[in-house]
Length: 431
Image 1 (cartoon, one colour):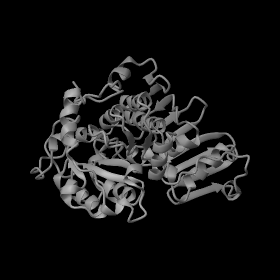
Image 2 (tube, rainbow, N blue to C red):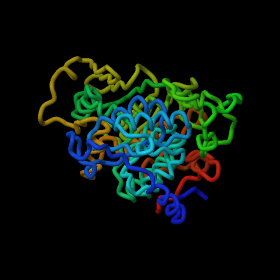
Image 3 (cartoon, rainbow, N blue to C red):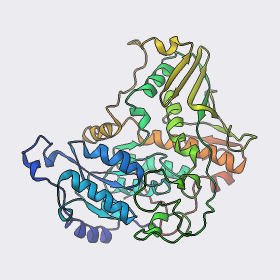
Image 4 (cartoon, helix red, strand yellow):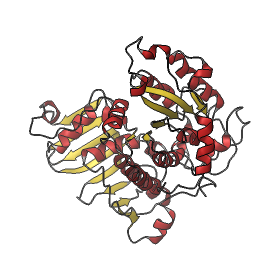
């Protein structure tokens, strides 16, 4: 059985959680210009590695209408580092400051927490997302949203069933320079004419983990780090020792990630899906390449072909020209496609004020975020379908509305989800 928040568990955890302090500075009572404590959104961060340290913590700490009240991290050194950072920012003593735990269920059991920001490895995304929705928390979850297709479907169901505000960490939709949004606006406005082909230049699929055993990092809850993944000995490549300043290479291994194809693919396939207005859809056929690791082809019902390969980012080929969107790149042939300003009668997509800011605004308004769960789930599914074609050298037909392979019982039986280690089975959506 999955480790659900039963009534007994909730009562026990709530009793402990209510004894945990909520951060309130003396200056919050009117001595400065911060938003009053009663008006702030209480947020907890789950997963305190590089992404949290470099992006989520500094971004959230400088937002006046947010109060970071708890952190969750399975590594003691990283957990204590994150807590100390929050406490220092708010100017409180450790005993009166941010709560810290290695078990996300303690976070979800606290009724004073409004929202959670999940920045764990992707094999640890779906379970906290679903349980957070069931616990009434709004959610920001890093990309790639899931490790399997069934997880993607289940996340959509959980968010919608429990009416939560959800932001996928596809930050390119909120890019400060706006080139991703503008490129998508130009394509949707018909500047390329009928789009025929898209290439997505990102890394390749992951492989099975074959790392040897190393002495366990002191203070690391290794069993919790593994969670639903198979039991295996510790290696620092998967969970680096202490606070680190690099993206760990667990991304290379199938037990925890879809590889570079999933990592940057979750960014650039997302932009391709956004440009093609496919946030609620996806390809209908996936064709493996002759060369392993590059060239998988996706066919869409409207005739568009998407190919894994080519320059960094996305290249769209249409009847009237081509357009290349990437990090620091927005070019076209002919140049007039991007040089001529958008007219009022052309497509104008939502201009995000920033990815965290958009999420917080939507928590207040209950509107959809710029990267809603449907977008994150369907983009993740595009990546998973491509990886499945690579791994099994198999042509697949896919029904994106019913989340099933067409005419392929074996694929439906084996490819929709991954084996899980008890007790971390995928939770039901119902509370």
